[in-house]
Length: 209
Picture (cartoon, rainbow, N blue to C red):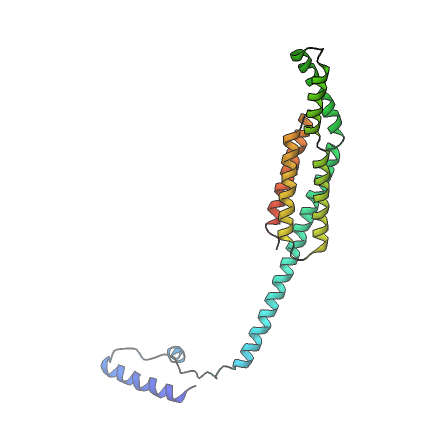
């Protein structure tokens, strides 16, 4: 207890009772809550600084650990989608020659009807041009290469968010090209599924440093 504060409070209470005789007297709780009545020791700034530093370090360690756990989950999610894309690419690749052959046969019939059976050179030229445009093996190879880079980046660890974002853009570009060059409903469906998986990867990448 602070004797000076108690004496000052007692004096104030006597003056108040003189002015307001009917006012109730102060209760013990009122006295103890009065500012300055309970003397407080001066704060130990060095101890306070030490405790605050320890708490900050612990908070940062917990934050880093939480981000590490979240990053591991995001990496697993991306790996799962990369595996799904690889499987889809492997399913699409054998369909390409069949799709091109079927479409070539269809075009051949239409060209012969339009040009006449005698102009075989023109038909072959048109078919060669179509085959060059419809061949998506190069796009499939680039998709596999980009998927490999995504997996390598995840194994490497560290701040790989920007690189993964760039790779996601490249994957999306190849999937769009594949969709544009598709010559059958099966290839179009496969390209659409690839684009959806790429979009899911891009959403996850936004949360990676």
